[in-house]
Image 1 (cartoon, rainbow, N blue to C red):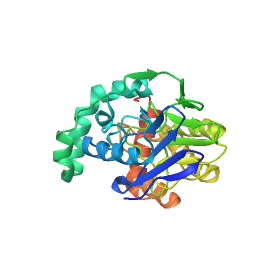
Image 2: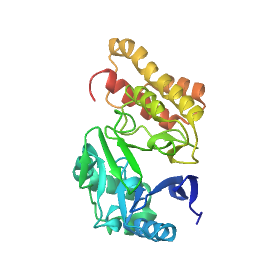
Image 3: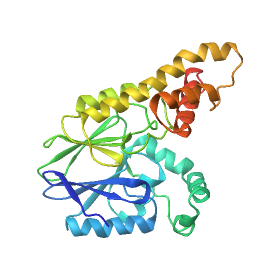
Image 4: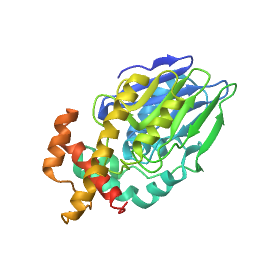
Length: 279
């Protein structure tokens, strides 16, 4: 398994092969903040063992959002504090079981692990902002707006200029749009850039920086503008905006971006539904 990699003074990342997820650890004098908990109870316990190789300090957890690969390992870390935006906890309570069923269909090899994984929502929540004292180091948790979900959290370590972006930023594959708000995402990334003065750690893939985030913002903005621009004509033609986009529009956007059609279909479907006022 790849080791922890120090991206700033006592700030570490570790990438795991499953979904190329990037986990963060911010070490203070009194405790360590863990950014996300992986996909199952078994994976969470493995992560806990890996964290103990890094530090013996007590831990506190933040979930960047409610998707299974970021929050289903929570129970492995109890009885610690688990922080998140308030709608993250609501989403896990309301949709966690259905999300687990969907993942079982998608990744049947994880069936046994997922069925033994309790859904454990965060118990410390906030609306827009919270600051955590790790002992001689303050870490900022911020909800900047809707994007990948309606409850994305970024984690800023101001003393070293490092920002954990969750899945608002992905490196190595297009972002995920299944629960997204494409028309809001560009503005949220713009606010993220206002906080990014050093390394940006994506939810998946290699840590990166401002130039990469600016390029991804331009891609997401193109999809948002395509949805806004085309919706009036599609509405006039009687198009049903409930999660679907016309194939020619998807193919054109995929060619422009150089992306597979699947994420483009999801992005434009959600974007058109947003433009129509359905989400």
